[in-house]
Amino acid sequence: MSDHQPPHATGQISPDGQFQWNGTAWVPNPHLPQPKKKHTVRNVLLIMIVVFVAGIAGCLALIGGAANEIDKAIKEDDARAAQDVTLGACPVKAEFGSHAARLTITNSNKAAQTYTGTVYLNKGGEQVGSGVILEDVQGGATVKVTVNLYSAGSVELTTDQVKGATCTLRKVGAFETE
Image (tube, rainbow, N blue to C red):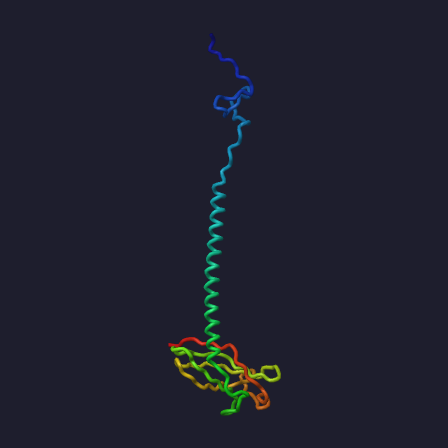
């Protein structure tokens, strides 16, 4: 017997299937199925993006819900405040050298309130003057308020502008004072 081993046949596969004889050397087996690529990094990034987007959506939903509740509360307060304020004498009268509207404010709450709003003086479908309400009223109290009316640029109104004009009350609000 000789120590010489017979040559391997070209294309012979190693016992473990990993290599193939090309006639001169063992080379990686080209017929092996390629190992499946792992997408761990991609999958982790996708999960992180989904969690981030869901977190942002949740935060926006919470903020939107809170804003809606605040808006409803403000509208309810303003509606209640608008019921507390009624226009008195209008068209306006000349008092102390300026024209003024009279308002009656009744605070239906137990706590003191500061009432805010705007009185508009309208003539022929056009706004000719306005005045601002800013009045503190104790809880359960009724007060009469005189609101000075001015034309554009804080100039006093003329009698001709006021003659035949009517008043409207808008944007009345109230907030508790300490």
